[in-house]
Length: 130
Image (cartoon, rainbow, N blue to C red; front, side, top):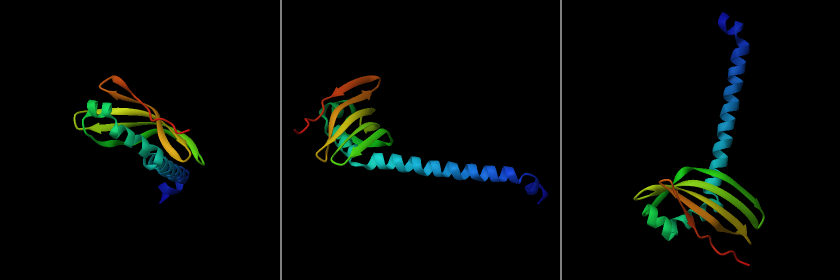
């Protein structure tokens, strides 16, 4: 018990650091989950899954990586997102970089690139409604 009394300030500091680290982890995971399961990511993933060039380069697209980088900004019926995520195909894997805009409540891909084995492919975006 003498050791705890002598070093109680260290015990307090370490306990506080663990609590702060746990809170930061929960906040980070919540943000990543929100971005990766939101309508902006869903629209981007569906676009990549159905793009003929992406299928030609990767094969059948079977899924997407766990981490989604980028951010989503949304204000009512408008918004924008710049997302980057891994794409898993039956032949090989790639990384998608997608710019998505929300207009009149609808998320559409403005531009996209797919990086596969060091080569970058431009994917045509979707037409924006007037």
